[in-house]
Structures are given as structure tokens and as C-alpha cells.
Image 1: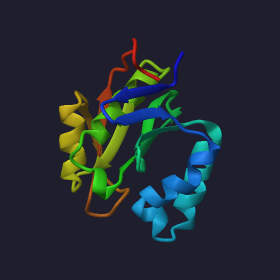
Image 2 (image 1 turned 90 degrees about the vertical axis):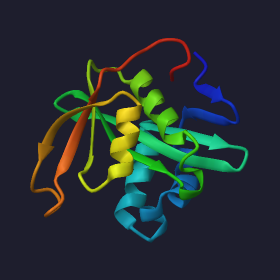
Image 3 (image 1 turned 180 degrees about the vertical axis):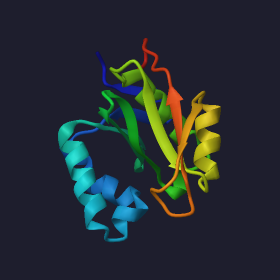
Image 4 (image 1 turned 45 degrees about the vertical axis):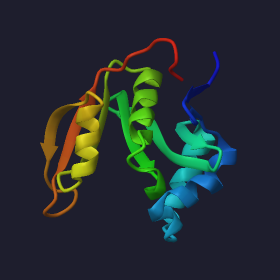
Length: 155
């Protein structure tokens, strides 16, 4: 199976250990000297959990699917570079995550205050699945569910 899917000028592909440096630059938290996020990016890349969206200029964003959430898929990270937002990169990454998920269900979460992420998830067909208080004081975590789909064109 070809592990790169092109849509226009943006390519979505499985990431590897060689991508970690470039993904740190795309991730505003990691680029801001957050050692924990940098370590996570390196670990995700080594584990092969990362899907990268890129064009000729380099990485535009990435996402991470893990399987530690009740043995279901969990999209633990979705990051799109500020310069690439509004171009469909996040939607392409969500589609790739859903297409590559090996569990019956794929979940993710975002803070109630993160309206752009909630709009993206709803446009991509994800459904609200629950609300959790206590992770970030005063800003509950909203969970979403996507039934993974497979077929041609997915990683």
C-alpha cells in the first residue's frame, strides 16, 4: 500500500523519526521551548503514530492516533501551522486518522473554549460523545467520536 495520499498540492503521509525536528517547528507549543511536547513529538515519530500533512514548503501539520483509551483509537494531537489554517489541512489529517484507525471507534477531545477545533470536528463528521470536568479548571473537555472508515486513499 502506498502510504502517501496527495490532495492537490498537499500530501498526507505517515511520519517517521526523521520528521520530529520539522514537526517541532510546526507545533507552537514545542517551538516555544516546551520540552515535554518536544519529547512527545520525538516519541510519536519513533512509534510511527504520526501522520504528516505537507506541501513543497515542508510540514503544514500533523496528527497522532494512539490506542491507550479503553483500547479504542484516540486522536491525541492535531496541530496545523498557523500559516496553513483555513486550507483544509486539519480536515485532511482527520480523514487520514479515521482511515488508518485499527480500532472500532476513534475518539478525540478538545476544550469547550476551542471553538475552531469543535467546528472542524463537526464539519468532518465527528459527533459529540461527552463532557469531562476537572482537566483544565474552568474549561471542560468535550469528547467527540468518529466511526473509522477504510478504503482506497487512506493510510
